[in-house]
Image (tube, rainbow, N blue to C red; front, side, top):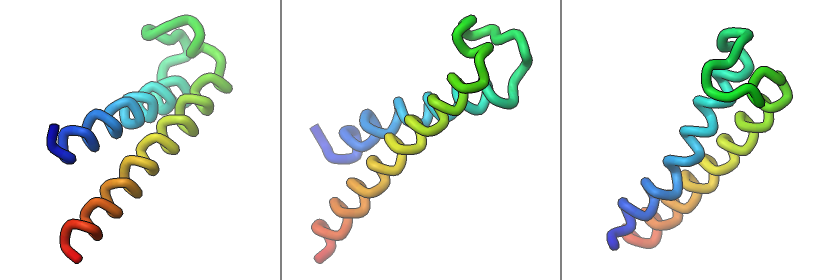
Length: 70
């Protein structure tokens, strides 16, 4: 499996969690995704977890590119 596919699989849940977190914080008061997201703290949880997952995918991609071109 190529490294690009691995990074995409690693980054996708992070970006989905970011979207769910943003919807939970700034979306409609009655969440249409899940009743759990009516709590604003859940939105912040998804935002933080999604940000961390996306950041780790970005760092791993940077190290792979650095090793590939050096």
